[in-house]
Length: 520
Image (cartoon, rainbow, N blue to C red; front, side, top):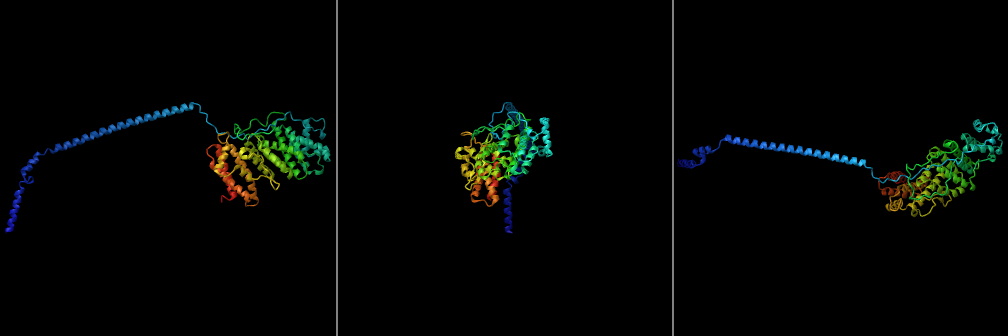
């Protein structure tokens, strides 16, 4: 009981102590409540402050919007003004003449018209040896001759019994082929006669000088003197090297159309008679006395390949005549004249590009024609290279130790040097048009094409005959492949000529890789 009473007393003392605290004093509580403001006013103040803040935010957003619109409008005005200024500048530039920009040199002249203008009207063919009626006019006599040729009654009408009686008729038929009307019937009659008659009693047979004289009668003018072309001084002709002038210049004889028929028949007769010469049926005079006429005929035929009118029409006939002329020489005589024939081709035309065109256009099947191409390409390679690189030697082909005509392809390696970037750079620099000037890429293209023609002929023939390649040939082929790659890597620029060289290099390099087994 005592402890309980003590607890009560302790609790009472605590209550007495707390009654003076503010939270237990009702009067103090009432005083505090009365000191507080009106809650509604406080809420209204908060709402008013919030509304003011929202109004300020709206005003700021509106100001930003107006500023953005103003800046966007100002930007549009600046863009429009800038576009107008650029348009005015472009219009002013278009109105002004363009400045003279340096043009890439065009290809040197590759075509050259071969004049076929007789110095005087072509003579009428003398038909008196045929014994035709004197009452006939010349045109009527020619018509009768054509009728006799078509019906194959000429020999019986004239009374040909042996070579002596046939000779005058053969001369007349040759003249008709050379400059008469309707030459094809006469050409066919001559080929039939020489192909079937007794070789020991043929009568008159046209010789090489007769063919050359016939060309000059038709208006062909042999070149006078030797044409000297400077390696860096060859100009470029307008129009991609189209030759000025025309093969069909004015003159007597019915114009180019009539002379073209005679020229074609004459070339076909030459090709057929050279074939009969090799068969031993006729003798066209392929001896020491015929070498001058051969050189004249060779030059004339090659010049036809450069004529823009004659080349597309007579290509096959010209090549057939070239092959016939080259194949008809015996081996000792051919060894003597092959170099001269190759040198004549290297000197041909108005530029090195023209000479290369003539050499490569004469594509035939005979080995002699291909060897002549190789020798001529070697001659042209030496002439196109600077004298310091060519070594001052003009001999491009020749007789090998075994006595055969051909080219030592190792000479190409000696001329062009090592397959290195420094060697290629030196070559390109030496082929400049003038001291310190830009490289002459057309000369570089001719050098590369000639080198390829020389090496490829020997390499392809050796590979076709007895693969694998001989050690010496294989070494040159591998060097050629490396050299062409070095040239391709050393070429810079986007000129048309540079791109043309790169296309050529990509093509031939692949062939050399396959030939040497490097592409496997």
